[in-house]
Amino acid sequence: MKNRRSFLKNTAGIALGAPLLSCQSKTDTPPLVRDSGGYIPSERLQKFQKILREPVFDRSLVTGPVMIRSIEIFQSGRHYFIKATSNDGAVGISVTNKKYIRNIYPIILNRIIPHFLDKDARDVEQLIENTYMGMLNYKWQGLAFWVGVAYVELAVLDLLGRVSGHAIGNLLGGRVRNEVSIYYASGNRGNTPEEEMDHLLKLVEESGATAVKYRLGARMSYNAASTQRDKSLIPLVRKTLGDDATIYTDANGSYDVPMGIEIGKILEDYNTAFYEEPCRFDHYEETRAVADALDIPVAGGEEEVSTRQFMWLMDHDILGVVQPDLLFYGGLTRSIRIARMAETIGINCTPHISGSALGFLYMMQFASCVRNIGPYQEFKGNKDKVPVTATDSDLQPSNGIITVPQGPGLGVEFDPDFIKKATKITSI
Ligand SMILES: [Mg+2]
Image 1 (cartoon, rainbow, N blue to C red):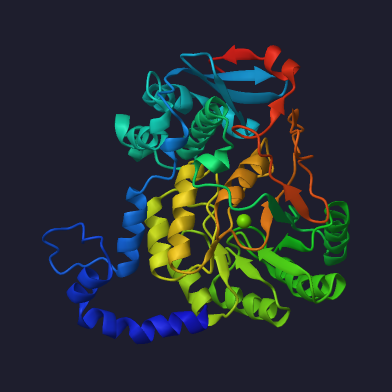
Image 2: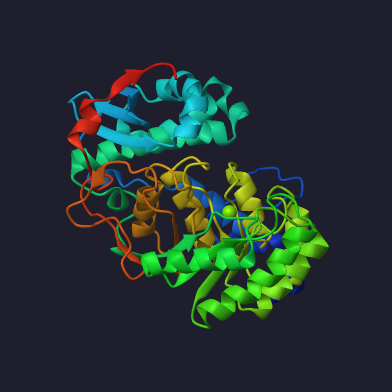
């Protein structure tokens, strides 16, 4: 990011010299503040704000209202799912991450679902906004709130897809690809470099992937042992996988600025494709200092829940790859807006997704309709063995490529027993 950032610094004076003229002549989005007191949103921010006001959901594909009669939480064996049902009896389902639902179900039941009941599902984006603003829910903003919104949104989008016959990707801007190249992310940390290399090789052999991601540091901290592992592992992975492999790394906020730069320079020496969360995710100044000192793109965003914080990070050119988590950040429509913002500044939006439940399917629907997803998408597979099948995809990568199911909604069918045996729950 060094070159691009210094270019921006060099041109900053020009932009400041004629802010009103440039804002008025180069964009059709007027400043949002009438009496700005000298504050003029950057041209980037104005573009981002315009994107916020533009719909993601293509209402024209769903003819007639789809009134939401109920949204309920069900348990089926060791799985939990959310079911949205229309007045006509059509159903949409999202499968939840067990460890989240157990803790956040009261928020879903009491603070999120009420904003969707007896409403037209086609207003899904406005309903999400109403949920954020209603009951002073904005004060609850954080993973626990937005994950709940995401699961409700995904059930509603599945419902809309099933009613209209369209895949979710079609409804959210239109399909731009049918296949997605994946990278496998290792979840290990603390093992030896040799053990980790064996693990990475296994992941590559199983999936045919030519891209991997491995972890550095000690998650939000580092010590002598972890940095020694990092310094051995970085060259070992490149040497073992060869020059053609795409290699990503994730430090999960481990480093301070000096160590972040030191490790980043080693990553550059070994042609690493991105460097995720070198510093604590909410320490923007530290992340900026590391990004300033390096050419390797710094990736981040999986912990972000605030649209405006994403906008600030992109406006200040700190991230070379932006990575909203499709669940933590509140679902597909919100994440697609971040991708559209990223596109205006020429960077990729490669979402983060956890390995639980149906995250891999949500990633595929996102990837099917977003242009700037980058070359490889995070994939952790159907680890929880949720019983889903698709007629047009085996939902597994082959030679590192996975086919996006094109059926209505999520594009998959659940094992009928999974649904039949489920019981509605109001407490866990
Ligand atoms: Mg990460």
